[in-house]
Image 1 (cartoon, each protein chain N blue to C red):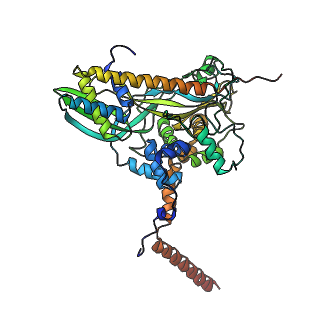
Image 2: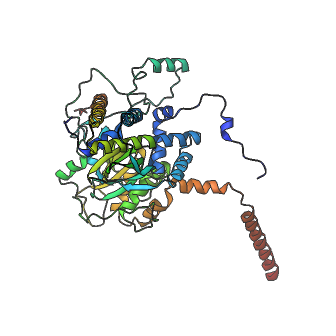
Image 3: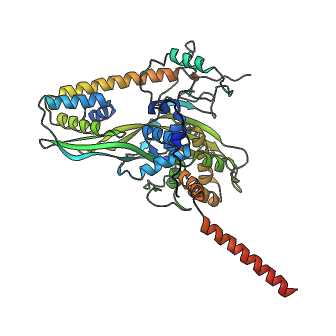
Length: 365
Length: 145
């Protein structure tokens, strides 16, 4: 190209520089999505990526994923169970009042879905006067959610628990969900080290979905032909804090070196099976970085089908090979590069075929 | 907070300390005569895999990776180590120095544990405030009959 492409930053205009803490606090859900799809928990880098990508999450995820490839892997953390998740939100649509409580937390779910047309000056004034304007405590999960559900007169039910037992445990106590199969404790498959193909173990598809493009995952689950009659019920949805632990190199004992936030879903359904009456519930599992409930619900729905639906081989192919954001967006990006030679080849083949058809028609006439 | 911290707990609190407080303390100890450490492994920014044991089949999988910085030093033959989240090489170096000073049982251990106590207290206060905030959103559904 003789002329350099115009730098998009030059077209942004003269507004103030967007600070990283503004992005992490006020566009937190976007930052979370970028980290999840990049497969790297790094809030400040994700905020940088989102700023550089002009707010385009797939492009930002691509930037962060590419950066990740230049970083060394220092260790594999100790296995951490999500039973120790410190919840900041936890709901169950299976039980009215599950043990541990229905904790709505910070969410946009119960906010009226009407565009806020409050005058800008009024919005700024309200923000400046809010009790949180002067609050500099670091909140690991501030999303600038504008509805905090805080009600001073609200009596807090005593059963709310910071690390509640999974609803799954209740279903197991009731005999409705089978215990773990106990197939040993295999080493996890690592899709970042070798490509996963159909037939790969469950750990491969869970890792694949955890860093999948949110929209692609949602589409595959929502639009799947494999969905059974009826729909599954998210028995539990959590958003909370999960520690990262490594072994201290000199004592060999575990040390918590960082904390992440994750969204977790367990979904339940009784999938139809030929010749069997539905006497128990099947479970699907979803877990991803950050606050991304749409992604965790979709992941759990697909895990349910992959693990329990008879004949889901084609679905496994789609899960393992079509959900990666940098893969699919990279493909569309490459289509914008010059394809003159390839296109001329297509034209020449079409012309040759047309000539061949005309000659055949003349010979048979 | 117990009188004596385990080495692991001290490492956790140093990993959770802010950049300013941990670097300031390390610089002050060096100025006060703590021997200069030998850097065994220069501060390195990298990733640690977050390995999760899921509750359905209780098998493990890799959720993703976490950005961390790691550093190792030696102080008169005593090793010190630090790993903390993010990409902050200076804080990781300071943390490794403080870990070594504490492991060597130097008098400055008191200052280090005072910092750790302050971090622990702050963490507990923040967590309590956060939980109080969240707990207020607990609801109990009733059935209409």
